[in-house]
Amino acid sequence: MIAIIAVSAGAVLYDVHARNASAATSTSKKTTTASKTSTASQSKTDSSTQTKPAANQKTVVLDPGHSAVMPSGSEPVGPGASETKAKDMVGTKGVATGVTEYDFMLNLANKLKPELEKRGYKVVLTRTDSNSAHSCVERAQVANDNNADAFIRLHANAAESSTPTGAMTINITAHNPYTASTYSQCRKLSDCLIKAYCTATGAKSEGVVERDDLTGNNWAKVPTTLIEVGYMTNPTEDKLMQTDAYQAKMVQGIANGIDQFFAN
Image 1: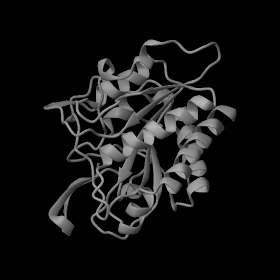
Image 2: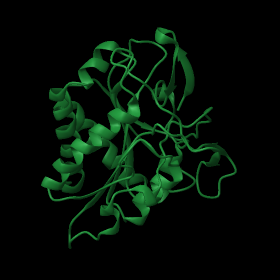
Image 3: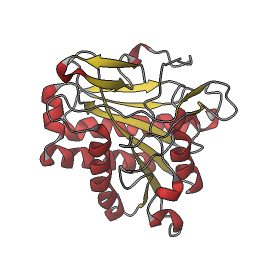
Image 4: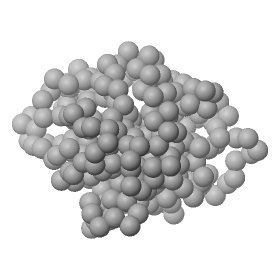
């Protein structure tokens, strides 16, 4: 998250996760006022977390950003870190549709899951409702405990201005102090996902951003990326993202990116 800002339309508070992140260097840690990273408890995931994948079957963990219920307190930004951040933030909200990010991302995950299963993946969700509190560390632990072959963190973006549009992926830097050994696979996953997503949807690509201040990324021991699927603070993009036709393209784009990650 870059900042927490007040958007004049409706005086709604938005949490800006990645806006202006393009100005971040790929080798420096960022200090932020709060985390837009989402949180989850493995004990509150669906029963698929208790099953083992078939031989050679890839496991994909989907992390629908945020929840309606916030966990209290803070947690270390990475294993052994002295810096702490809020366990979760409420996320953003559509300026035109009024749809919350947490409902949008859960809906998207529920559409993406059967598509991935149809393609042969084992799929685990970090949360299956919006009525319970989860922490970023717990979400990452779901991916770790399931030995995920890919950990996809689903988010929507926000900005102070209503102008920005487009999608981006976010992963750790090569010099991440917590999980640098996963960098090459995280970067590959990010590249595959953003290219396939923008090809399928026609969304503007804001590329791949590398930063080390996202708790959910730092605690993951598996290939991880966070995708910002579009800006809910842009009225046109906000309305577009709530159409069934566009969501079908979003699902295909993310699924295609995952396929490409494993194929290359």
